[in-house]
Image (cartoon, rainbow, N blue to C red; front, side, top):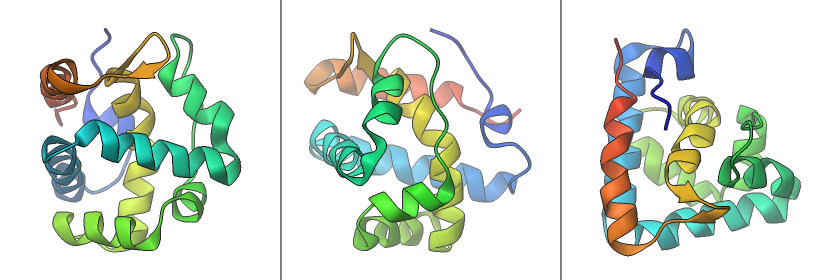
Amino acid sequence: MRTMSLDKVLGRADRSALESLMRALEDMLARGGGGLLLGGLLRQMESAGLRSTVGSWLGDGANEEISSREVRRSFHHTTLAALARAAGLSTRQTADGLARLLPEVVDRLSENGHLLWGEELEARLGSLDTLQID
């Protein structure tokens, strides 16, 4: 599994905002049913026409990029707003960050084309800590 710094994943975005978003995302996934939550988000994205993109994240090849606009279009507004509130960011900042974070997060939380569940998912959530800002 490759290690990538959060700065590399997220480019020039504000360091503290990115840390907040990553913590909020980890908290959201760690709280009851992270696999169900993430699976639901990926199904929303697939329904919005992003099946190929999601498949690239779940698979073993290169991860396709997603735009902030595609994140806003595919996520239910209440989900995006809740994550933004938890991170202390605007929904636009949250969508921008998610567009950069999701490919790596989903890649790390999946294996052989499928999301991990239960104890495997919980164990792998710890690997998100390596997305640290240098």
